[in-house]
Image (cartoon, rainbow, N blue to C red):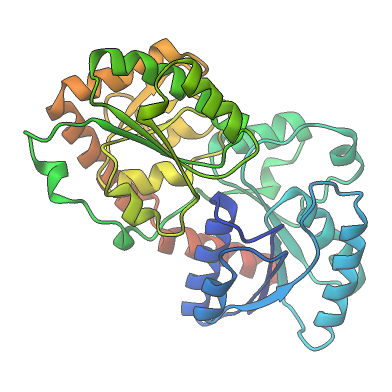
Length: 358
């Protein structure tokens, strides 16, 4: 199949990682894969892995932006020499772009819902779900059905997967004498990711364990708000803000406890990566997170937007090394069994074939 993947940009982040990983395995399966987006940090990786890349000016969050029309014109010109079998759009704006492209070229399109959408006027006027919409978790599937009246027959539940073999479990994960004092999060700096609650929780954790540290990897507009909060709580010397990273597997080796305090989360790709590295995970009990983190089995869940509950979970792991080891080992096993990238891509491929009738 000749497949066109559309996304808004290819900067480091969950959707970009999903797009790249999916494209990479599809190429290995023998498909001709093209990716169109605004430029980003991961474009070079696309080209290195045999994925054709075509830049379009779609770096906008508004489906009414002139960038959508400009991108459509560029895609139509590109499609004159590339007859695509199917288009797969990843973001809200590219769902609309794919809908226009499909109407003009008669190319079937599918979409992925990576999280939760506002039920605004734009979504009501331009639903643009495609022949099939992939939901990355049961919570996202319910969101589509309840909030947007998408038929269950049109939804394919395909959880995210990762290349587990790229993540290793370091020896210190199996050392009962190792002290878990380094807390980390890898996520864009956005209010929906709940960094505020993590910093507030760390102020309490540091009272009990003065040698505890927090590493925050990511970029975003609320960075200085978070920096000021750490200063206000007088823990700025123990909170480190670091850039977004391409090699999360390497960074995760330096973390002892991974935290995802999201207010809303479709599934949590970075959680899967942390589990694949054997880290104990603490995450908020929202969205699709309980799909991958089973409380007291493969991680610890806490009440969302509750820094006291979060601090308690972190302290529990710091105080109980055997619990941290048990949760980390179970998390790794679950990712290997249920959230493997090969399984995800095979399921996506089956939907492609069904949509185009082969």
